[in-house]
Image 1 (tube, rainbow, N blue to C red):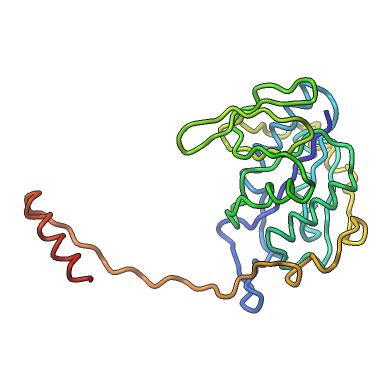
Image 2: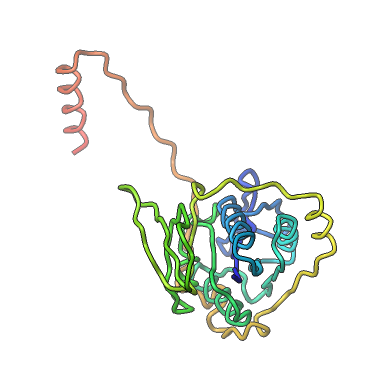
Length: 259
């Protein structure tokens, strides 16, 4: 089984900076980490490789510094790592990002399963994984908490919902996004860390993946951030120490005063 894992290097939550001119995240020179949800996608891919054989290819789009994230994943057990990096990608929204990643996946060609974390900690949109599936015209199962079975070119998955869970069957190849309940990520091994230092990180630019320049970056993004601001501080609330009936009456008066 050949598996592609899409990961993202995100700014450390204590060091998030915004470019005031473009209203996009500043990534170069900022301390970054692997998106926490992607750790579960990485672990699940390695577990599947250990069970079924094959290989794990890790793919990310970002600046050159994202190579460090790919080496971390090699240390965990991935077989190959590909960095899609080009200044033409700067400012891409979720649509443009998923388009570029889908172009890279088309270039890879040979895969049975694509795994993504459910969302990135810097955007929280949960759109890139489904966007990749849409660009590739693949079936998708989101918020997977358990892979119940993969057999005869199909899979059965337990998908988390707000009310409980669903069991979904789908043919392969397909894309899934996973939640943290699916596993417990392993630490890197010493052998893996040694291998990661010598591993070749393949780098592709926009031309290499055959991407249409009109679909990339800020100009190729259908959604753009118009304004970023810090919300005004809320005024303090009120505490009612009266009996329940009196408190209800007081709250009703307060609400009427707001109308």
